[in-house]
Image 1 (tube, rainbow, N blue to C red):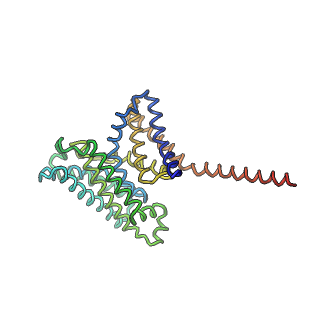
Image 2: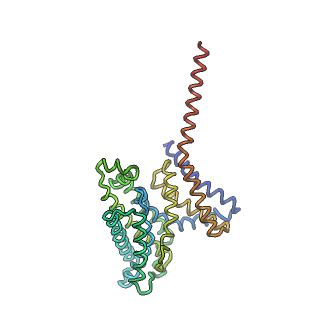
Image 3: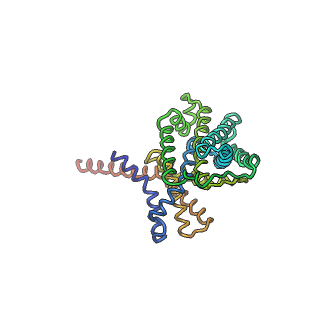
Length: 330
């Protein structure tokens, strides 16, 4: 228990440093309870999206079509639910079904055509972005303000907690989660151990589709009206989640990976809000976010070297002590 608490404290150092640094730099403009609550609310969609992306990214698969699937699911589910008078429950069910179908279709294509996931997902992103423009009258999905309650407290937090529990159980207590981790660690060894690589990857797309469908519902509730985009504009919504997952790979040395994903994405959102509070331009925010991510990754890559040097120093000191003892005896 002491070790777990110590490791959790180490994992919290990064978000706490970001919080304290920018609270001082902004002279209290950032870091108030009100601003932190706003960050929690704006982190809901990136955290849900991050959980969806984690299944594939653990295995080295980057799904750039995720944003396009969210847009398509939100727009189509809103239009269908409004036409059939199904309300938000109907929007949720239809959104999940659409996201699962679209993401599973890409998973099937990935296994059949053997195209790298990054390249394949960019192609599917173009297709999925075009669907609302081709199949809807005004390229828009709308809900009533009264139906946007899933974006309010405490509903948005409840949704995240439920989806996190599902994410945690799948990743840590199912065969699928174990196989995903095995493939991510070493695909050759996993294949030699009898893991069906194609099946695991396909089901990871299917499970991710469920999370993307839920994300689409919350995204629609936050915006009330979602307009179709083109030209890979949907890809911009996934970058905070991806950067948070990169940070999670570092924090996972100290806490469970699922917890690390949430901490990593929240840290990125906190960093972005802090830079806005400082009055930085969008270009400068992009540069600073990149520098921050680079520092974290460089530290992660070299943390093992520092530990190795400390161990070598400790061994050298121990050997020197033994030599001195032998010399004194002689």
